[in-house]
Every structure is written in C-alpha cells, then in structure tokens.
Image 1: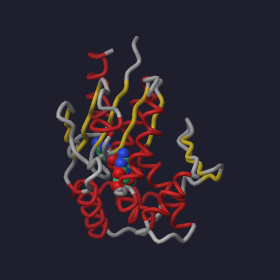
Image 2: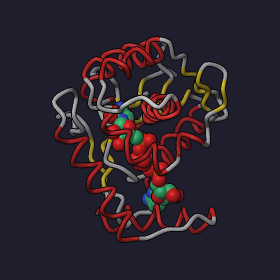
Image 3: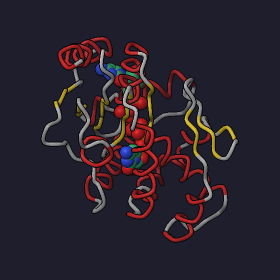
Image 4: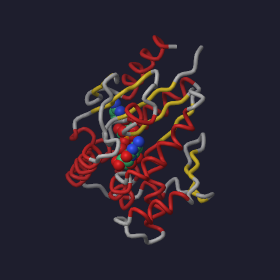
Length: 219
Ligand code: CDP
Ligand code: CDP
C-alpha cells in the first residue's frame, strides 16, 4: 500500500488532534501536531520573560529551540519535557500572537515540511493543506459550531478537574479563530481541494470512519 500525507486543518477544538491521532494509529502513520510546535515556542518565550510583541526576540528563541514530538505524543523543548506546560491557559491565550509572526511561520513550515518528506504522516494544524503540504494526497477541513467546540473543551476541563467557564471558553475560541483567520502569513483557510467535514453532530468514531473511507479510496 502506498504511503501518503494526510493534512487535517480547521478551527480550535474542531477535533483535529483527536481524529488525527486515531487515524495515524489506525494506518500506522506518524502523527505531527503542528499546534504543539507553536505552543512550545510560546511557552519558552513566556518562560524567558520575553515581551511577546518583540518579534525579533521570539525569532531568536526559535532559532535556538529544538522541538521534538515523540511517538507517544510527548513534547520536548531542548530536552525539557513540556507536554503539560504547553496546554496552560497562558500559552493558549498567547499562541496566536506568536504564530502570526511571518518569520516564525517560515521557520516552522520548513521544519514541518522536513517531517513530511517520507509521507506516512497525518499532520494537523491551520495551514497544512494550504502551505505546509500543498500537495498532500488527502486534505480534510474539520469544522463544528463554536457552541459545540466550546462545550467540548468545557467537558474536557471538567473531566480533568480544571475550573471551567463555558462563556469564557467560547469567547477565547472565537478570538483565536479570528486572529488565526485574519493574519497575513498563511491564515486558517480551507484549501480549495480540501474535503470539509462538519463534526457538530458526529461522534469521534463517525468522523474517523469518514476519513478512513476517504483514505481507502486513495491508497
Ligand atoms: O488544539 P487547539 O485548537 O487548541 O490549538 P492547536 O492546534 O494546539 O494550535 C494552537 C495555535 O497555534 C492556533 O490557535 C494557531 O494560532 C497556531 N497554529 C498555527 O498558526 N498554525 C498551525 N499549523 C498550527 C497551530
Ligand atoms: O485539535 P483540536 O483543537 O481541533 O480538537 P481536539 O483537541 O481534538 O479536541 C476536541 C474535543 O472534542 C476532544 O475532547 C474530543 O474528545 C471531542 N470530540 C471530537 O473531537 N470530535 C467529535 N466528533 C466529538 C467530540
């Protein structure tokens, strides 16, 4: 069976990473979480007390930053395990600012493209189908209503025992989607040749099956 690249894009909490991980497991492919890369850089910049509007300083940090994504979904920044740190509210609320810096995106895209050279990869993010792997054999654009996406994050927080405010989550998700869609350098956008799946009223299993059916037709 030929190995392909599967690009999964879409707004926050549409289910990209959940579905991408399951699809990769099923196909025995590598899963690349590009959001984790932008989150790692944001975490390091906060840790080093850098002014987040200082684009040059953030770029300098990135140049010295080795980001490793392990097969069991751990994230390392220069050998420091940052898997949990990069999911903090502070990182979530600042990552879109850091990800809007064009030079940061150029460098991240270069690193992501190297990871996809050998195919056999499921990569999720915002610009995978449009910029990182424009020739991906399969492009999926996952969407869901903002109410449903906020509800999903809310339930995740409750499960983890984290304090959660549904209305605040909705506002944060809307804000991040707006910044991600309006930036000049590779904004969040459905590729012309991407297949859109609205997951609002679908289960994880239903979304996975839709994608695996599309893959079966291709490989
Ligand atoms: O999982 P969630 O939707 O919370 O976000 P994520 O995939 O972890 O991505 C975090 C942020 O990184 C996004 O809101 C974007 O600002 C940025 N990002 C990006 O600009 N381009 C990508 N390919 C992936 C993420
Ligand atoms: O990566 P992204 O931000 O797009 O979403 P995620 O981190 O995978 O989070 C989606 C959340 O919604 C997870 O808690 C999933 O269990 C849940 N969910 C889903 O992903 N897909 C559905 N069809 C239904 C629920």
